[in-house]
Amino acid sequence: EALLASVPKLEEKTARLYSIEGQPPALYNLPPGCSFAPRCPYVMDVCREEYPPVFNQGEDQTAACWKLEGGHRLEEFHD
Image (cartoon, rainbow, N blue to C red; front, side):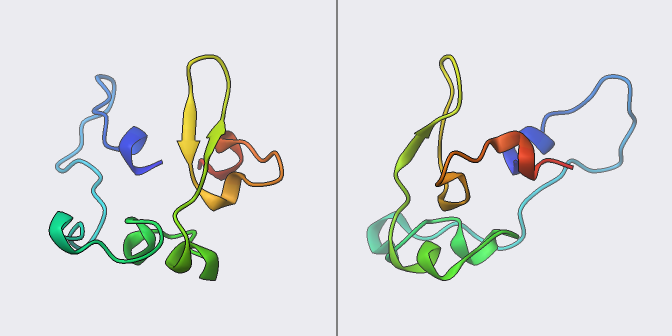
């Protein structure tokens, strides 16, 4: 979601692009679970414990997020 929100839109003038607060984890010392868990607005307990599996989201589109478990779609979480 944050990646999509960071894409500039030609029809809108903004002073600053959307970004995720905080810093990504150090690659030499990755924590357990999803790397985005400390900065994700949708974080759940499982996110901090296990890396999510990859879910198919359509033709040539996949995503690794526990929110997609049970057949949920990325579109359900967009504003």
